[in-house]
Image (cartoon, rainbow, N blue to C red; front, side, top):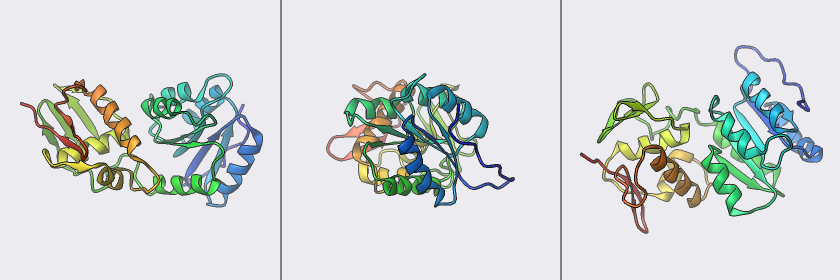
Length: 243
């Protein structure tokens, strides 16, 4: 069951943040900080309750612990990504690289290692909420469709197809691909990508690498010899234009 009841809202509601953690002290602390921002907060203490609330309440941001009873946070995030584009911040007590990599691979947008600063969590959520979740309002995405070989990027419909078949991308992956495709052949540094796609100082280069790897996998782009998203060693990435 959820630990908190969502606040009823009208047609235009404050941003909604779902906090999922089975440690009551952390939930109380985080909830207090988030409520000061004027956001609506709901909480859940296990994986199944988190999925139910994510589907019924439609939060804008989900703060999701990795270690949960019922279903762990990795599996919860994977399932949420089948029906929601809410921003997901994963919390991990281990601090192990594998947790972060797996979390980002299944669609999380960011991660924090426990113990973390609630103020830093608030700052990261603020940065996320400044961006439309579709990425349509960022400089990275232009309203016109672009072609990369057999890949079509249609920003108006937020749709990517490869050889006519739709490719299921997260909003962040879409924004990253659209930015690179905006100027095929131009090399973007990791810092430029962070500034334009993430619009935040809190992310590191590793986040870009994970999202590039996800893009290549979904585009069936050979990581050993990528055609669509190419690595320029020591500099960054560029979009190729295969025939």
